[in-house]
Image (cartoon, rainbow over all chains, first blue to last red; front, side):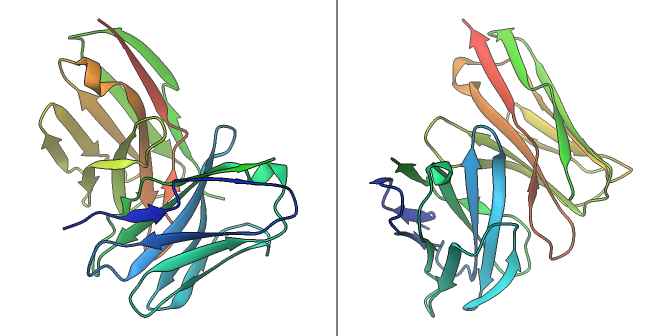
Length: 112
Length: 110
């Protein structure tokens, strides 16, 4: 089975712009979670989607949003980018009746 | 919010030595996961633990789910250079979000 894939792998944006990141889960997995990883804050949970519905949400401002499509692929959007949004954004998928999450390689976002 | 205290934060060891790291929490978890992350990559699952007291091995790695359900440890035996990286513990309770430790950075001197 192919693993979790994320595109793009690297992205450079400027303050004020918006960005959309994409995640394709492992085939058959319906849950996709998004995390932000920074040196200072570590891995922080953004949100989880299951069957096109947001099931859990972390403590991030409304500029961070996401969605999930019927094929379980998910996108994350960040609007009005700030310098502090520079981070590695990771998505993870998990199958039904399991707690084990599998991570993608991440998208490295740099905001200038 | 819930937090996991992972220690040590960093380790500098000689190749061939055994490694031990642990995570503790003030909350009870139903699942403990251990991940390894290489620079610029996503975390890779090493071991998953689902039952208090469970001891699980994956090659040279051994992890245990604490009896109190508030802690877990990971041991690496006979370390090799490719063990270098950052190790994360993560805990899960019910349908809540996965909570991560701060990570243990492992450096190995050949």
